[in-house]
Image (tube, protein in one colour):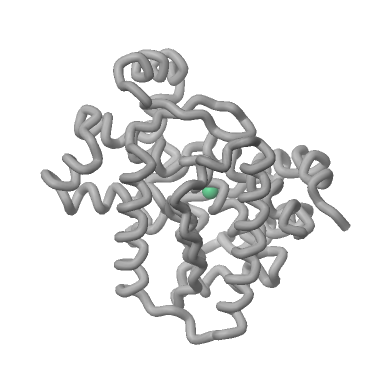
Length: 275
Ligand SMILES: [Zn+2]
């Protein structure tokens, strides 16, 4: 699923983005840290409204874990990452990008090795990933990474690319009204929450690299040793050995180059880590 479909903006992306930016007003935003321009057709208010709705319907349709200890750990780690993200955005003078966020951290009982974060800080961790995260530091790697995707508005970018490709840039509300099932599926896929592995759109390599980078900084600011990211991704790679890749891996390609890239970013992340 790292094929060409998702990369239709890649080769000439800067040129195409320029054209799109001049056609649609307010259609582009800037990713924090990297400063990369991204396509952003859906207003934040619409993203947040749909997120609230889809998150609560997901929680109704799935079983929350009865493991109180593990649930508390997920909430504790999530709360610390949230604090780090808020501080990071405040220090960059970009707190308004987190307006309307209502953070939630839930642990869902499922064998899937997966986790995701919808806009507005709506996080789900699956119990199936806990044997790989092992402890709070491993959880901080996963949650830092997923939250980074959300605050870098990668879901909006993916939704925008698909709305443009499939519906010629139709507004989300219009797409919802005319094709509710397809639009909903698009949404769930955009956040890695879809159920069919084969149907999942992967985050692009650019987005993955950004999420790794930002996630390292967030976890370090939250007080977790960012060096744990290397061992976590090594465990994920081992976990996938032999069998079909778990959901989390199908949307998060794990390979040697990713680990090497993370190792290269560790010195920067360690500056945020207070011993
Ligand atoms: Zn990712």
